[in-house]
Length: 249
Image (tube, rainbow, N blue to C red; front, side):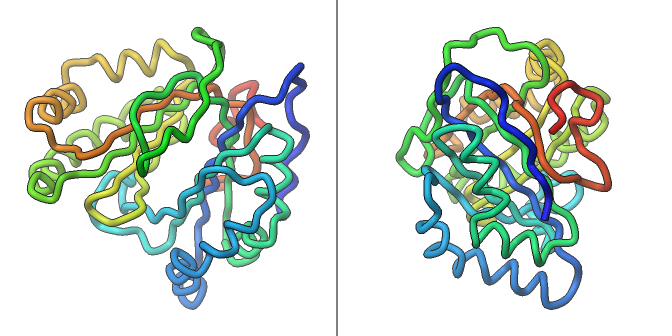
């Protein structure tokens, strides 16, 4: 079980978002993880302090593909403060079950700084007023793809995935989802706002896909959020993705 360290010192409680990513070895553990997409729901509802939450699978390769990765699952959750987030993602029974089965696990703790749109009809994130944060920045995009436009959407994704995968600035990236093909989430961490903005504004596959989404009305629901990275717990691929930043642990 990982030790998630101490929360940062704050003068007031601020909503904290956690994203926990779990790698499962082949065999029974992967079957267990798949089954927990349904079975974990009652247990999640009993976690003290837990607000909005989602259980997600992931895609293969860079994660941004329609082909599922049966070895990687994740839990996104909101908490009233960072201390609660760190405690519960390490010690709540349902999270302990995931940690005990996983071969590797990593959790990143985030402070919302901007959010627009809805997720399952809700506004899950409560942004702070820190408009120009220093240090690593995380970006999350969540969308429900209209079934009739899903094929066009997924034709765009491989190009976007390859660009993100070769960008030397990105610290971490993953594509996850609640429902395969139609409910998708992209999540990435960047060293600072400038590097993230350069990628988003560059005239490449990402920018062209954004224009196509707007012109074609591909999504029935969408949410875009940005976060300040508070710290992390555990490892991914043998190391902390934040190892070279001040936000590690």
